[in-house]
Amino acid sequence: MTGTRGTADNIMAAAQGAMKTMQLEDGQNFIAVTTDNPSVMQAFRSKCQEKYFWVLAFACFLHQMNTIIGEICAFPSMKQIIKQANRVVTFFNSSHYWGGQLKEEAKKCHVNRGLKKNCETRFYALSLQAQSSRTPLSHTCLRPDAQKKEKGLSPVAADVVETVLHDRDFWPPMLRVATEEGDDAAFLLHAWTVFNRRFHSMNMNIHSLALFLHPLCRKLAINEAAKGRSLQFMVDTALGLAKQWRWSKEQATRLAADVKHYYQSKAPFTGGGNDGLVNDLDKTFTWKPPFSTAEDDEDVLAGPEDISLDEFDTAFDELDKTIEAEHRGEEFLPGEGILNGKVYDFEELAKVDNGEVPTLVVDNMDVIGTADDDDWDILAVGRL
Image: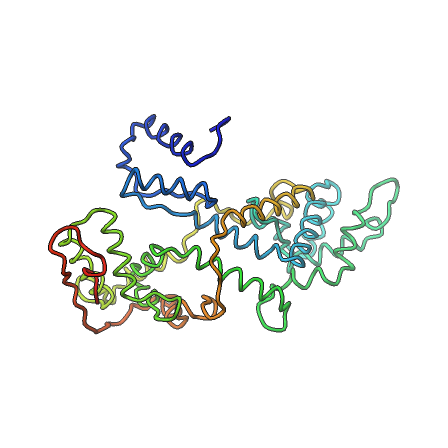
């Protein structure tokens, strides 16, 4: 793509060229395409589905999670805190002498967690491991030679000393994130609003269906609230996939019946009391990503490269552009929030956390459609 405009057509041509090089040009080895979510990539995903009708198209979920965190951290007061934290971390990570002094002070305080960035992405900066780092930082900055040059040796930067020792607004949010009324009410409202709004734009129909198809979550995924998902919704979404994959009416009718039987925990979807199954499913909720790293107990200053203030400002400028490019115009209504239980039932979520197998659900459903041929209708085949 170097030297070529990044249009959807050009990206599609590049993708097809790569597939041809791999001798996979018919696309039959691909089931899904995932990209970030600016408008040009949305158009590219649509072109993929036009060319390869069976391919599922997704906006990258982790990329969107990064954007959620970035948008929350862009709140003015929190952005300032992160900027100061970045400055403190950068100073000690880049100073051989003072970094070493902080390391020794941390050992005296029995601290083995270092100053690290919370993610290496460009969408948000870093935070201090504040609860463990405050004491060694304070002890280091209180030293006379840290506050004033002695014997020609440079002290700790004045703005770093000011932040660590004297800024009353810095440490409280570093030590405890606002989570309840009485904290920073404006920031809390901002965080709730961002998360609720972006959740609804991220939570595609197929994500809800995937949650429903997890054996422990078949009841959690069903909620008749305004923004919740009904059983009819799950049937329609499954039939939408069947339609996309060009299934026959007979296959679609059986699928609709199977979805209902699955929700009712009827054979062959009973789930039973299989402890082995529950244990296996529990592992999926505590899965550790392959690229995560263990905490380094030896080096309390271990961390990625420094971030300059210019890079910090650039990262937030890019975040603003990302938010603008991904904006879908969906307005969030206060009564539709996932965080107040209007999408998923928190009592059912607690059962999932405890590994409880859903109980039998009994009701009636007519799954026989009225179409006479394979040009079937989703609403007719899936009518409850």
